[in-house]
Every structure is written in structure tokens, then in C-alpha cells.
Image (cartoon, rainbow, N blue to C red; front, side, top):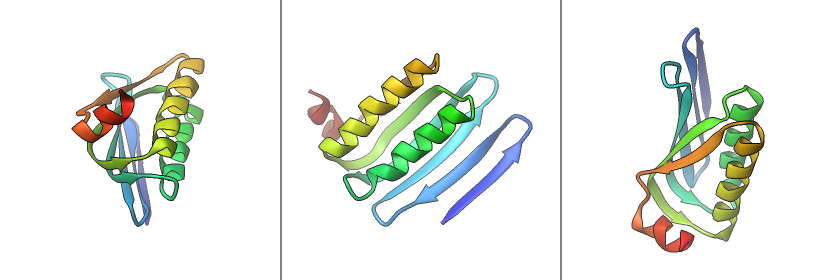
Length: 110
């Protein structure tokens, strides 16, 4: 399932796999995009997150806040996608920030 609505001030994009759902909202006044991630980020679902980040960068939206509060599991593949996202956004002149980091993700990052 995917839905997208274009607006003058930004856009909203939603995507879902069996294990992961992602919502994307652009905030023009702050010139950043928030990706809300809910579910497991693993080798089966991480491609969805990678594609979402790459799509934002290609749409000239490289300033990304990833709301990680809903992440219930993240394996090394998911961590690799987050690190790759940080690199890709940085190379495009932006950044990737994590917000609402759960204990699960904190332990993995350590």
C-alpha cells in the first residue's frame, strides 16, 4: 500500500511492508522532512527505509529527522541503512537526525 499527496508546502508519503510502516511528512517552515518508522527494521524490510531516504534526497529534501520511537526491532541490516542514510544526506548537503530513540535502538547503536 502506498499513498502520496503533493502540496505546495510539501508532501506526505506512506508505505508499508508486512513488518514495517513508514510515514513521511515535509515541514516547509522548518525545511526538513520527518520519517516516522513503526515496526521492525531487518533484512526483509530495510529496503523500504533505504528507498524512502533515497527518494527524499533525490527530491532535494536531504534534511531528515527520523522518528525512531516506533521501532520495535533493528538488526545490523537496519543499522547499515541508517548509517548509509546519514552518509547520503550529508553528501547532498543535509543531515539525518534520530528522534525518540528507543532502548532497543540505543543498545544497537552502542
